[in-house]
Length: 359
Ligand code: TXA
Ligand code: MG
Image (cartoon, rainbow, N blue to C red):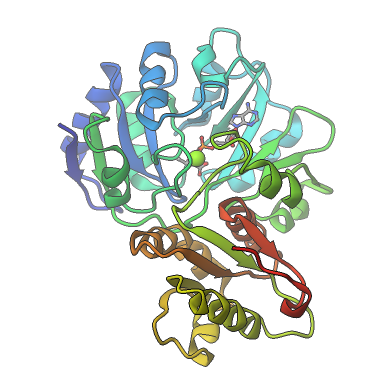
C-alpha cells in the first residue's frame, strides 16, 4: 500500500521524483530524505493533506510543522516579513539544517502552524528533497517521518517500520548524513533564540549573528515530567527500554561508571545494552552485553550521524535497560545530548558512588 521509490541520492531520477510530486499535488503524503533525517511531506497550503501527516504519525495537533522550500521566492507564500538578520542567516546557512521561525501569513493552514502566528521554514540541503519540492512547485510541510515519540528515521527502512501502510510513498535515497534534526531558531524577536539545537551549531550561528539565546526545557523538566504524562510534548525519542544517560564527569572515566551500572543491572538478572563510543567499547569487557557503537568520541558529527540508527537497533533487541554514554555539549554535541536526554528516563551526572540506583 505504501509505494517504495528508490532513487540515487545525488542524481535522483526525474521520472520517479515527478511520480512522488504528483502524489503531493493530489493531497497525498510522501516520506523523503533530507540531509538531517527523513521527513513526511504534504502540500503545506492544503490543510486536509497536512492533516494526514498528523494522523499517520499520531502527532499531537498543537505541535507545528516545518515548511520546506527549494527557492527563496517561495518565502512569499508563507511569511509576512523576513527580518534582516533572518535574511543574513538564510544567505549563510541555507540550504542546510536550519529552521527559521518567522511571522506567518494568515492564509497558512492552522494544521501547519498549530494555531501559532509564526511558521518555521527551512531549505534542506539534499538533492532529493530539493528536486521533490521543485517538481511539486509547492512548499512542503514535513515533520520527521517517525511515529510520534519514536526516534527520527535516518533510513527509509526506519520510515517503513513505523509508517508502512499509513502513508502513500517513501522515497529511498539512502541514509541521511547529519543524523539529528535541524536547529530551530526563533527570529521573531530582537535576539535570535534556539528552540531546538540541531545540525547548525550555536557557535556557527553566533559567528554570523552575534549572541544567540537558548530556550530549552531543563533536564529536570524533561526527565521528571515525562513519566507523569506520557505523550506530552517533552516525551520524545523514547525507546521501549529504560534509558540511562551517563554524562561525562570531570576527573572520572565514563567507562567506569557505565561498567559499574551494567554490572549492577546484570546482577539483578536484567538484560543490559550499551550505546557507547568506540573508545569506551574498546576498554569495557562486553560479555553478555549488547553493544551499539556510536562512533569516535572526538568526532561528534559521526556520533550524531549514527545516534538514532543505533538507538533503534539496540532497542530492537529488547533489553531491559540501555546505558548510553554522554558527550561534551559543544558544537553538535549540544544536539546529541538534547536528544539523548529526551530519550532518557534517568540522567547520571555525578560519580556513580554518590548514586542509589532504584529498580
Ligand atoms: O531536520 C528537521 O528539522 C526535520 C526534517 C524533516 O526537516 N524535521 C523535523 O520536524 O524535525 P519535526 O516536526 O519533527 O520538528 C519540528 C520542531 C518541533 O519541535 C516543533 O515544535 C518546532 O520545530 N516548530 C515548528 N514550527 C514552530 C513554530 N512556529 N514555533 C516554534 N516551534 C516550532
Ligand atoms: Mg520529530
